Length: 258
Image (cartoon, rainbow, N blue to C red; front, top):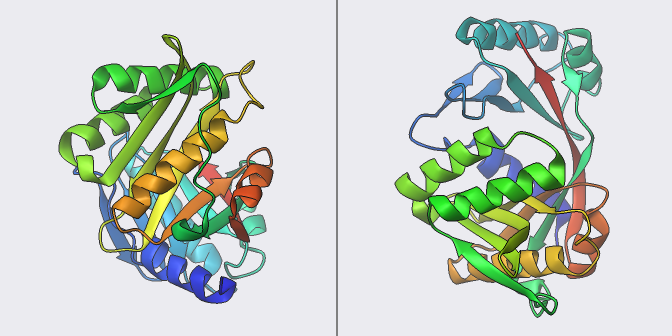
C-alpha cells in the first residue's frame, strides 16, 4: 500500500470532503475548518483543518463560540499529521479535553484474510430493525461502560432513513448479545469505516472481534468499497495488523463542553 497516497486520499474524501451523517446534519466549510453540525443527539465535530501558527488560536476560538452558541458539546478530531504541530497543546489550552489516542488503520478489503468465522457457539445476526439496535446498544453499554442513547438514536435513524449507508451486526451466544459492531458507508468514496467493535468482558479473546471485522469486510467488498478504515484502540490494533491493516497515523478526539 502507498501509505502517503492513501492517507492523502483519506484526508480529501473523508475529512475535507466529508458528507453529513444523517438527514438532521450538515457539513460547513468556514475558513480553514470543515465542521459537522448536527442535533444535540447527533455528532458535532471539527473534521479537518488547514491552519498555521498565526491563525490556529483564532480558528479554535471561533469554533468554540459557534458550537457554544448552539449549546452543543463538540469534538475536534485531531490527526497526528495535522498542522500546526502544537495544535493539540493549543486545544488543551483553550479548554478541550483529550480522549485516549487511537491509530488510524487502513486496509484494502481485497487484501484481507476474510476466512475468520465465529467461534463455536456464536452466531452473527444482521441488524435491520429496532430490536436489533437494542441488542447493539446493550453490548455497547456492557463493553464500554458508557451510555448508548446517542448510538441508539443515530443507528435507528440510519437504518430507517439511509439503510444503504450502514451495516450493523451483533454476535449472539444463544440469545445473549456478547459483541457488536457497525460499518458506515460513504457514497461516492472508496472508504468504508468500521466502528463500535466491542465485546462484553468474559467473551474477549475468542476470535469474535476478528469474525466481525471479516463479516463487515466482505460486505464492503460486495458493495464496491476498496478501503476499510478503523480508529483502532491499543487492544484492537494487534488483531487488525494480523488481518492486514496498516497503521497510517494517530487520531485523538479533543472534546469541548460549553
